[in-house]
Length: 442
Image (cartoon, rainbow, N blue to C red; front, side, top):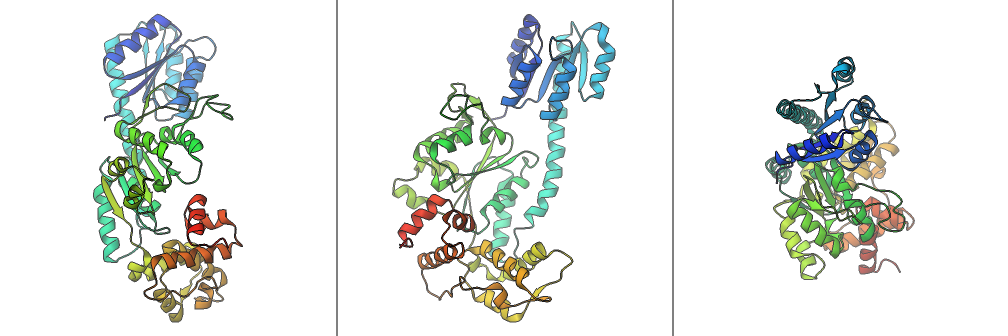
């Protein structure tokens, strides 16, 4: 669904304002009217506008003051000023403050339509230019998908192909493999690169708070809702919404997310008004969602709606040839360009023999430790490994590997489960579930 152009009309003359609202709604625009500068600011807090048509002379906050506030809060919004014959000098001042153009009242509505079309084109051009710049910047981020293994090359190629589509993407992979990095790369290579990239951890909050975080709420919607709040869905408008740990999502929220994916429409908590945003959804999970469906914990229809494109991030043990490149990257990251460090042969052999249950995240932590402990210019095996890096035998089941890794992480943080969950890249709720499953709370 193509996003409607959004226009804000600010004029204290109600008859003229309503005339403009009705006319431009018939033209297919999404139009909102405001009778004062303060009312306009309330609207600007609620949603984004492509074009604002602002009367210069209004009681209270005048058009110039409102123009300055619009440029502070929504700098890409194009502002058209309406002015009386005697205030041309003020209109020229408005142009210097960033207004796109101005018309004198009573204005020719056809001329106003032409100006709106031009302003919309400029707004699109600004977005495209910003997108190109952000894409160049994110190119550097894309290079952080480091590796020359066949699996990583195939993944990079898939990211490039899938990025241009507005369809949802499901990223699967174990904890620590870099799923968020893949989501960032998808955004950076997409036409949405100049727009927001918003991250939501679906396992970080209880269901009722997560709904408010996602969709926003109205004042008084629930205890503690002392003011209106826009949700992350609105913050991601025209950009990408990354739903991490999607397998943790509460069943009731799964229903609302499915509706949002199908229509782009949602309601804030405590509000009957239906809102629309243009958002590309990327979801990630370290669970086997097919098994979650069989267990009745995840909706099958939501799974198929998310799984338009699936990207699988390989664990580090399946692409060990990338370890030397990753080590070089992390040494530079943690030591800086000026401090020249390298691993000795024994340390590199030890890394190549290790199975990394925590994947790239664990390797990063080990290299960071090595950089801190290294004496001189060489990082040794003992700088990288400690008693928590237990040996992993060939043929050991993934469950046993995960159990040992969780146990080691818990020991390293003296049993602090919140810290352990953060290091493992999972929610506290998910960690509690695994602790119980592996009998680690004894």
